[in-house]
Length: 167
Image 1 (tube, rainbow, N blue to C red):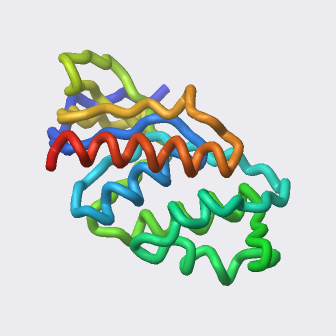
Image 2: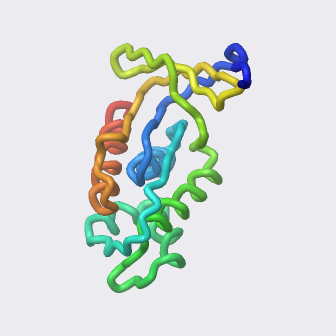
Image 3: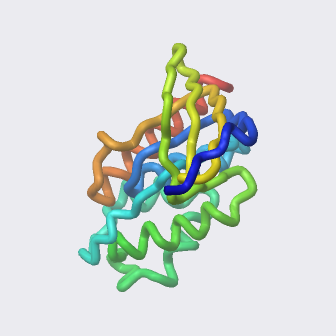
């Protein structure tokens, strides 16, 4: 059994995103396009090899900041736009990792969550080290749609709502 250390650092973030599925990555990507930083913790991909045809609304929501262009080389077809859900998440996750406004921690467990209005305080741990998190806002994606079109639409709507509150 490995002993978990005391909190080693405090991470302050404008937006903490927890939960898996494509919506978490969409929210982080959309807000990052407007220079809002986010921390995505413990993201779990759905790993569905089901091919999904993105509808027109989902495609339009992915056009700002070139997200659809990042996905295009991985699509099975571009007319109509078809991609597997697993590949969508894998590509978008890699895109998030290289974005300076998104920090993504896999393999972390969220603990001791305390909410105060929109803000949240908690710790995250990898089993050996703990970090304290202070977030201005928290989004939990566990209850959001997991189907690709629904996740894109709902994730984009949540991101726009967050952005409207700070502008």
